[in-house]
Image 1 (spheres, one colour):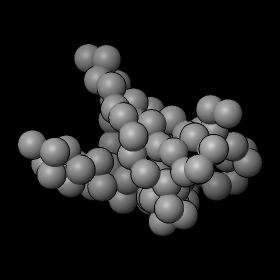
Image 2: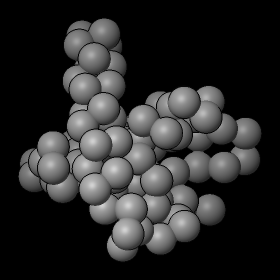
Image 3: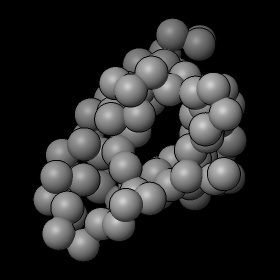
Length: 81
């Protein structure tokens, strides 16, 4: 089950990198794609499903990010510390 979840998250991460490339002109410094975070060595520590959105929490050393997935095309990640 964990492998299936990880595969789903990675597919979503790949989709968000495409969306992030399209939105670079309006993105801020704090917004980054989940694919980039994983490439930079961030690890998925937790996730939470609220019924309509999936939240994934990533951490590397003392830095942490939260990624919100409303759907495949509507996602965002931001620093939480």
